Length: 423
Ligand code: AMP
Ligand code: MG
Image (cartoon, rainbow, N blue to C red; front, side, top):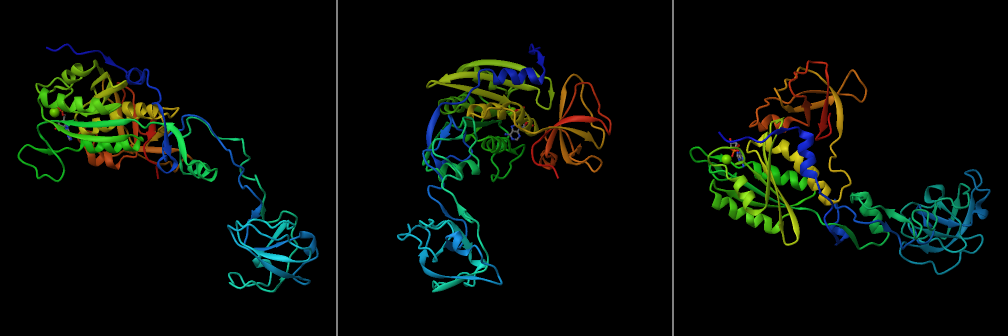
C-alpha cells in the first residue's frame, strides 16, 4: 500500500503554491504589444494634452464679444476670412468682427475665444467651399466649444501606477501622451504537456481505446486567458523517458509547466518521478472534489524559478484545479497585485446541491439574476457533476463551493466564483 500524503484544505494548498510568487522582471515593450500586460512602475506624462487650445466642434471661431447679441431673431453676420483645418497652425490672428471656419480638433486661432457650431449658423454643414460670410444665430460664452490646453493632462502628472493592467483605456492614455513603449512585467511563459497512451490530438481519427487530448487545449486556453505566453509541447507517452524528455524541454523555457494526468498512484503514472528528476517535488492531496491528486515542484533553470504543476487527468479536474491554483500564480507572476480575481459572490441555491464527505466540493453551476433580490444571483447545477463531463462544464458560468460533509438545500446561501458574467 503506498503511503498517501495528508489531505490538506484548499486554502492551505493555495498558500503553498503561491508561496514566494512575485512579479517577473520588468521589460520594455512596444505600446502596440502591451495590451493586457502589467506596468512595472508608475508612468508620468512629459506632455500637456491637449498641447494647445482647439475646437471641440466643426463651426466658426469667433471673438465671443462680437456675437454677444446674436439670436435666431437677430443674427449677427460676420465675414469668413478663411479656414483652419486640423493639422495646420493658423497663420493669422482673428481680426475683431470676423470669423474663420474651423474643424474639430483644429488649433484655435489667436484672438478667438469661442467656437459657434455650424448648426447655429446659416452655413451648410459639410459644404466644401468656405462661405464669404456667415449669419450666427446664437451667442457663445468665452471658452464655448473650446478644449483648453491641458484640460486633459498636465505635463508632469502621474498617469498610471505600478500594477495597472494595460486595458484599452490605459493604452489610449499612454498613446495620447506620446509613449511608444512601456515598462511592464514580462508575461509568464507556460508550457503545457498532456500525458497518456490513450491520447490523440483532435483531428486524428480515434483508434480503439483512444480519446482526444482535450486537456492541453483547455489549459492553453486558460493560460492565455490569464495573460500567459503559452506553448503546447504535445503528448507524453506513459513512460518516464518520454515524459522526462518533454518536462526537460519545458523547464528550459517556461516559468510554469502544467501537466495533466499521470499524477495519481496508477502503475503508469510517472509525473512525480519526472518532477523529482528536474526539481524539488512537493506532493499533497487537496481535500477538494474534483481534483484531489496533485503534484507540485520547483526547479531552477537559467536563473529562473520554474513551477511545475501536475494536475489530475480528468478534464473537469484539470479545468477546476487550473482556476484554483495555476491562474492565481500566473496573475502574480504577470504583476497583478491580486492573484485571485474572479468575482466572489454569495448566491442563493435554486435547487439542492450535494457535497461530499471530507472534501470541499467545487460544483459547476449556472448563475443567473435572482428575480427575488435585486443584484442577487441564484445558482443551479450546470448538469452532470462527474469529472469527465465537459458538456455541463461548458454550460457553467461559475463554480460554487459546498463545504465538506454538507448537502446544501434549495434556498441556502453559498459562495461562488463568477467565471463569466451571469445573465
Ligand atoms: P490519469 O490521471 O492519467 O489516470 O487520467 C485520468 C482520466 O483523465 C482518464 O480517464 C484519462 O483518459 C483522462 N485524461 C488524461 N489526460 C487527458 C487529456 N489530455 N485529455 C482528455 N482526457 C484525459
Ligand atoms: Mg494517464
